[in-house]
Amino acid sequence: MTVAPHPFDPKLDLVLERDVDVPPHLVWAAWTQPEHLQKWFAPAPWSVAACEIDLRPGGVFKTVMRSPEGQEFPGVGCYLEVVPHERLVWTDALLPGYRPSEQPFFTGVITMQPSGGGTRYVAMALHRDEAGRQKHADMGFADGWSAALDQLVAHAKTM
View 1 (tube, helix red, strand yellow):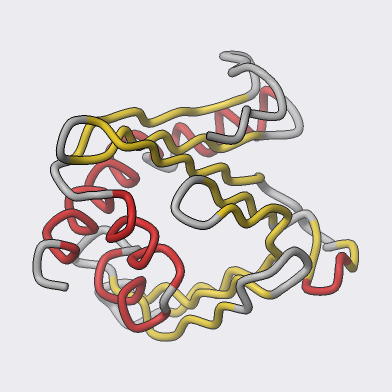
View 2: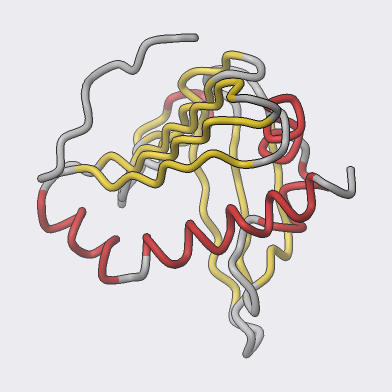
């Protein structure tokens, strides 16, 4: 397992940790294949209208989330680290090819480790400052990311 680049900082970071009853290779596939990610990434009743993944450092990670009213919210960033079946790191602070972004919000770190017959899943959102962390918390990080993880697990069981 790759070691985290730094410890969790409760002033700047948000975290979701859970043991899930699907193996790491299915969690990995759900995170890295657009046809799977589109099924679970946005907490219902939201959906993912489009997804583009170029799974390599500097490659694009782009989603378009759609509200129940049909409004679309694109998110684009790039991968920083890709360790198959263990770890994904991406950021919206950089665009594909490591080009600086105009409005960075957070860096995501997903780790998955075998645990029993399933996976120890840890998702961290790293923020530049306390205000950004609080904004993400107020947007519903805990409930939204937890609901999306429930959807990931349900979808992975059908893969």
